Image (tube, rainbow, N blue to C red):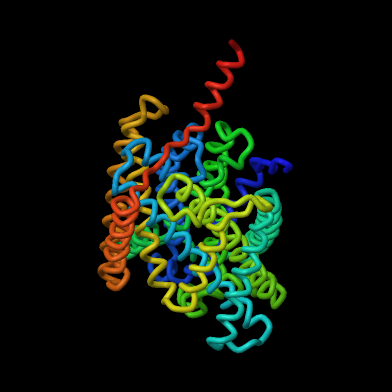
Amino acid sequence: MEKEKKLGLAEVISIAVGTMIGASLFSIFGVGTRIAGNGLPVAFILSGFYALIVAYSYARLGGKIISNAGPIAFILEGVGDNIVTGALSVLIWISYIVSISLFATGFAGYFLPMFDIPLSDFSKAATEILLVAFFTALNFFGNKVVGKAELLLVVTKISILLLFIVGGMVTIQTDKLIPSFQLDQVDGIIYASVIFFLSYMGFGLIVNTPESMKNPEKNVPRAIFISIGIAMLIYVGVSATAIGNLSVSKIIEVKENALAVAAEPFLGSFGFILLSIAALFSLSSSLNATIYGGANIAYALAENGKLPKSFERKLWFNSTNGLYITSGLSIIVVLLFDIEEIAAITSSIFTIIYIFVLVSHFKLARDYGGNRIVIGINLIMLFLLFFALQYYQFKNRTLSFYGTLAAIAGAFVFEYFFRIVKDRKFKKRKVIEEKHKDKETSSK
């Protein structure tokens, strides 16, 4: 069988950017504006800074610990094989399932109105199921097809958003972009930055693909920082253009369609349609990339002994049973649950994962590189960020706060079952070290 082609740097970056630039801009943009007001661009800058805090450890570890299990491989190396590591692995896989469901629901919300199809339960469910099935089939054909499809989607999406930014600069009212920085708005900017920090999560997909990547030692760190930089520029530019062309109250009123409505003053009805299309491309690329990352997680965890054997790869176009199970469960979530509340729970899960990655990096800094003082400061800031997120959820989304606790408890129960009853263990995978050994052996 022909060996599957590796993903290049541009394709890996496109997978990360495809996930980041999607849900935040086109799903919760109105929510962020309601919280931060015209200080939303500042909130995006702050949340990008939070992402760089985590990226420092991801880049250091991701370039040396090569595993599609990503952050779980880092935690396994730093914390060891125990029930905590296992529970975290289950949590991160669940978060991917919920993210897939969120993107599918958002797509249906934009797609059906464009064609004047009523938003009934049946039409939404049918659209969501067909969409997940389509991208599952796309992922079935392997890494290279996914990478090329993602690159096309991301280039199209960013081109439209850049047109929005450049065109909007002509009619932008700069006085609308100056925050008052009164106490209430400062609080709002901080809370919004906490929420939108989670919109940068897509860079984490990069460490779920290194086994399928060309030259991961160099390309993992490069892809992480480049993707965050691209996302930050787009976020700040788009939010400034929207707020500079529409009033805050109008953005809150139109909610998810805010960017499409903001394009009308300088692009007319064409702009409205164009930005709606961009939303569909954004959510499609986010869905495509997340299915790919979720399937890799399922496979890697099964191979490492943390999910049932049915998740393991069976060679047939290099597909995975984990791909089908991940997509199937996401469809169930779409049909049965309130995605908005569950997505808030997922945000908390990712923050927990980030904390443990930084703890692991602190312990591994001597072996894998990194300044422990910097890591320690980053860890303290991430703890504060996590508690701020929980406080916000407790005050505004009580159900998601308790849902987070329930998800954590459920993951520990699931892990206990497989660890005690099945006696399954993680297997460490350090591909780079093995390569170095091979090179040393060959040189001798």
